[in-house]
Structures are given as C-alpha cells and as structure tokens.
Amino acid sequence: MCSKRKTCHGGPSQQEQDSPAVANEVFVIDEEVSHLTRLKSEPSERTRACLHAGKSHISTFKLLSSRESNRSGFGRFSSADCSYALRKHLPVRGPWCVDNMDCAAYISQFSSDGSLLIAGFRGGRIRIYNADKKWKIHKDITCKSLRWTVSDIALSPDQQYLAYSSLSPTVHIVNVQNALKQSHANSTDIHEGLNFSAADDESSFGIFSIKFSKDGREIAVGNSNESICIYDLGANKVTERIQAHVADVNAVTFADESSDVLYSGSDDSLCKVWDRRCHKRTKPVGVLAGHLDGVTFIDSRGDGHYFISNCKDQTIKLWDIRKLSSATKDCTPKAYEWDYRWMTYPSEARFLKHPYDQSLATFRGHSVLRTLIRCHFSPMHRLVVNL
Image (tube, one colour):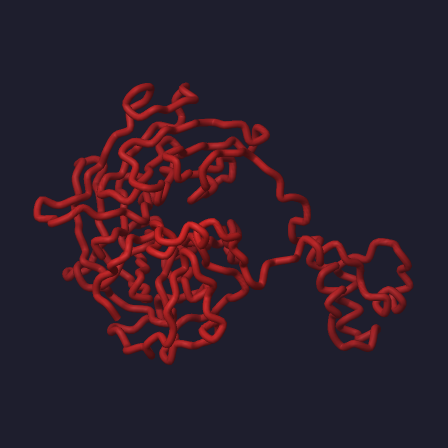
C-alpha cells in the first residue's frame, strides 16, 4: 500500500481530464434500488386466499400471525408479502425536486432536529432549506476561498453557526441565524476563517471532514495531510495535531458528548479510535480492520461504543470499540485497481472478505461511485441510512 496518495482526492480523475467522452458518459449504477416500484405491490394471492381478505386492507399483524401459523403453507413470507409489509414502514412518495442549480450538489445533511437541510454545491454555493416551511431557502451562502468544491459542512449543536471547508487548510464559519438571507463572504456577512495549517507545513492540504464537538467549543477535521486537527474556538487556535493514518483522513467524528474520544477513517482502509485523555495522544487506543478500500464516512451512535463506516469497497460496517485490537493486522493486498470517480466497481471484488474482519455486521446493496457517499444512523439508532 502506498504511503501517500498521488491523485487529487475527490477532484477530476486523469481519465476524466484526458477523455471528455468518459466524463460526460451517463453513469450506470449497477444493482439500482427499485423499491419504489416493488413497494406498490399487493400480498400474494395465496396469502389473500388464506385470510379471506379479497382487496381489503391487511394489517401487518395479520400477515405476521398468518406466517407464524403457516396458514398459507409457504412457511415464510413471499416476495410480494415482504413488499406489502414494507410499504407501511418505508416512504413510497417522491422523490420530488426541492431546487435546481447549475452545478452539482456535492454534499448535503439535515440538522439534528430535521428542520433544516444544508446542501453544498461545487460552484461555491451553500443553500439551507427550511423543511418546516415547504423547503423555502433559509440562507443562500456564497463561499469564500473555495478550491474545486465544498468538501464538508457542519452545523453547530445550537444550529447558530455553519462551518464549511474545501480542498484547502482553512475552515470558514458563518452565522446562519441572522436576519440576512443572502450571505456573501465578507461583503454582506462575516465568514470567519480558521487556519489549520502549521508553520512547518511544506505544502497546502485539503480538508475532507469537519465535526463540531457536542458542546460546540471545538472543531475536529480530517485532511489530506494524513492527520486529525482539533481547533479550540475559544482560544482561536489549533490545540492538537495527530498524525493519524498513512493516507488521506476522509472521516473524523466525536464518539459521544464528552468529546474525549474520536473515531477516524482513512484511505488506508482502517478505522481508528483516539482517546484524548491518554498520556500518548499521538497513538490510537485501538484499530479496527475489516474494510478493503478507503473509508469515506463515519457516524457515531453517540453512546461511546458503536459507530458505522462507509467504504469504497461498497459496504457499510457496524463496529463496537470494545472489540478493537491494539495493532494493525496485515491485510490481503487488493487484487484489483479502480477509481471510484469514473469506474464501475469490479464485480470480482464485491464479495471479497478481510481475513481479520472485526466488524459486527456488514451491509451491502448500495454503491459508492463518483462521490464519497455517506452513511448515518437513523434518529432512533435502529437503521443505517445512506445519503
């Protein structure tokens, strides 16, 4: 494994630069989700016959009772029965268009209470939509000092401030709750810049991940300098630098409300756990192996034990930090080469397994293509949701 990535993370690939036809080609996602069609189906005729239901409504309780007593003779749900039951619990309306822009939306996320949707666009715009007011634009932000795209956004816990980054060492913070709808950097609104570079940095780097601490006093970032940096907003300076991985740090997040423990994920395929209370803060308290490619995102359950990670190997994994190891175990080298920005994931690599996989569960069926798709726990912490 190479210790330093030579390609521009998240930017246009060399193939895209050399071949406009490839860049403009319609991108086909294999195994495309078709549940919007399937979830409109009815229970199987055999199930309806055994329940004497005709075309009337069949409750999920009746379906489960029929299955447990094997009244249909199947001994299980048919595919139609599964779809009919799921349609009562999964959304079947939509999708619908909220806004049209002249450039691609690179990143989006909801506020913790679901009232706001924040979207970052490659053209240097961030728009905040109010979900409670028919998706009206709450704030239209023109970014400052943008390099290629908005790489990440983070809303403070009190929903007062928004931090945004691009492929540069500076994070900007803007007040999203003032009266101004239009926010032009340092023209109609102040976009305070937080510099994460060090005096001895030989070259500039890009920031890929931003997270506020639960108390809103600190910001953690992961970057192309293979490190994690912690910025103290009160002291107005970087207070910690951790040389965390041997490749780009794509994801970093706080484990719980204490902000003492952090999780990180990298293009070196590893997830690591960091405890700031330890004397040796430059060393992880544990390593979690199991992914076979670069980790794109991490979301914590908030209890200090569980988190999920999404990866370019087309999987989401659930982890328990109580099952981590103290050292990195060698992994079987990849037998394939691909670029997520323009290639389809190799079919022969889809079900390869890490020989020392420490994860509790692995979820498949989605695709990580063209952009570093993210993953989140649902608010009730029962589901894993892709965005």
